[in-house]
Image (tube, rainbow over all chains, first blue to last red; front, side):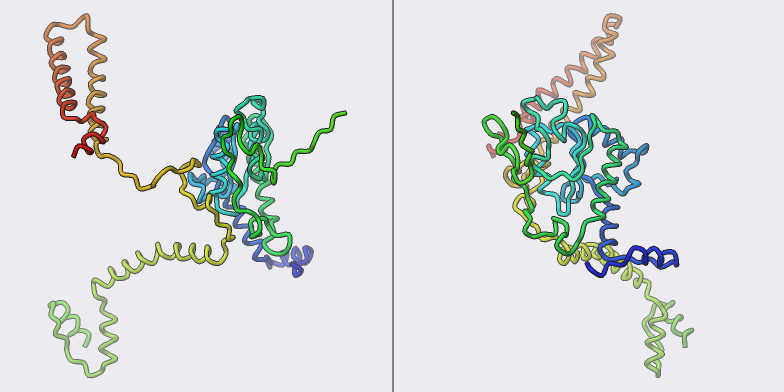
Length: 207
Length: 160
């Protein structure tokens, strides 16, 4: 968009009581202030997530209180807790069933990398092997303030997404796949062990 | 003229005075609301009010939705597990009998606990009365069993 209004002129107008906006800003403003998370928790992080939704921390202040029990109505998936290999296909399938645009917060050490259970044979070493994660929250478990911070970061990301042009958001690109392959139970491990489109860890070279 | 109209309405007769001026007639009929007119309004609002958000959602989906359908996305939602078989499964109504029988014996347990606690100090009469109570319930259980209430559905239905 080349006809973006200059920031200085805008604040000048605002001082005079004229509020200028664009469709994109208005649209993103609405989107970022009514994020509906999917209602599911996997482990102890879920308790912190529940505390965030309850009255003391009150995620409703940010428009995220409507935890939906169906992926069809959810915008945000908070992967709160240890993802076992038994659970991973279900999570990917739930993510696939969410309508676009959709976002993922990977909450806690376990959802990021397996955390303290990383050595467990049944623990997935990070949900970002299968679905794209927007915000990672470290911690074991992260406090509700950390989840609120991640939520605000996500709001910032949604606010900055472009709806038109070359740099428009991924979900608006019809060439992007709408689904991610669901891993299957193999003889020893999930197959495939990671989605190579999403998960390219840096190779460690040891001399 | 209005007085005679109101009078005609009050007496419940449809005999309206003949109006020479047609416009006056229309205005008068419009001004005196039929008592059922409000129900018509109510029905109209009741239809439009739920239809409007549905129509808006449909329009939004039609024109603004990012067009990214998929087989997995449109699949039946079963908490992330792949669905097996048809969604329209019939459940046996015999489950109801199970529930009733369970409820009876659940309540029996409530009566049995104080009986068991006070067992050593009970007079013979109390013992016999609780025995009769138990026997009645056991008889009921045997009756339900013989009637086939404890068979899980399929046997009786397939026998038919």
